[in-house]
Length: 81
Image (cartoon, rainbow, N blue to C red):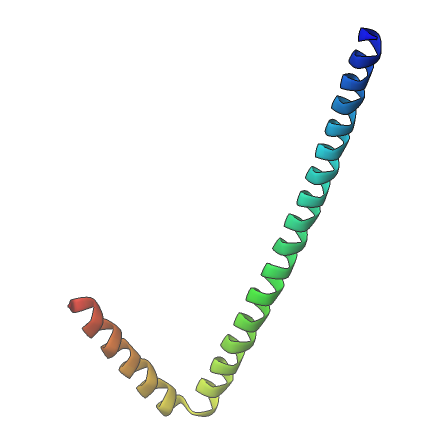
């Protein structure tokens, strides 16, 4: 009867190892998917915003310069405090 118990314990250990391997595989897959999605959903909108700002500054350089000056003044004022 003790032989059967040791066999059950070994079987449970094997199942536990297999389950842990499956969990690790799913976690790795989820992490890679999140990294890919994060790089797309962060990088692409940032590229779009910068391209829009670049086009706007080419079309209206005086307005863009005034905005840059105003934002610089506000940031400098906030950093001084």
